[in-house]
Image 1 (cartoon, rainbow over the protein chains, first blue to last red):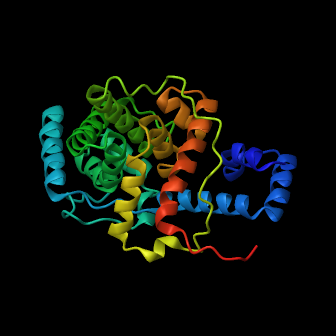
Image 2: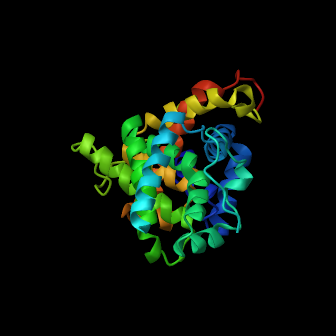
Image 3: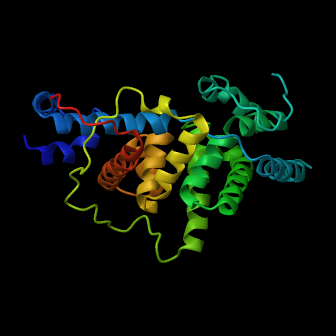
Length: 79
Length: 214
């Protein structure tokens, strides 16, 4: 397999959505190609970092406006 | 069921508490008219929904409005929510629609998610350098938050929206396609491009010195 083919299949490879044969060919390539290995690894880390990042607390004024709007709306809907 | 009041400003649960087993019970109670149950759901998801609307709109006012409208719409349409998906997934879809409407209003000529997009042939990464085992440990949480917001904000809307749903909200490829009215292949090609672009952007912060090791 060529490096370009590895990149084209990267999303499917990371999502484990490849048939075993193609997956094995990619793994074989990764054993030999340091650059592709780093790309696969750092892309995996990218997803992991975003997925595990904690959302920041809501700015207090934003939160206050949200809850005021909800209270007003919920009261109106239920009355 | 307990009836918690609105939590204190700034209080936030641990990531492991975000997805709780009691979601179904809270939704059922909210549908039955228990307002405090809906408030618990809002308290649980407000930060994630605000991050989502902020990442998509890249505008604080639009993000705030989209979040508010998403929660209000969710409450309004709760009687019709049949529980075929998780409540959170349903809420995410509502919030994405609200955020995209704001974005389209602000940038009508730029944002069209359903258009064919040339994801480009040349996706070969340029900077190939190792990051080490835990690059995130080198930054404070708030600093890391800024890096991630900046990186995703620099992606074009069609790419950052797909990445947001698929890799941050962890919707399946099919759910993402459904939410954005895209085909599965379109989601996959945009996701690949988004992941590679974000990798390249984070590379600026995380790369380590090259070594001669092979």
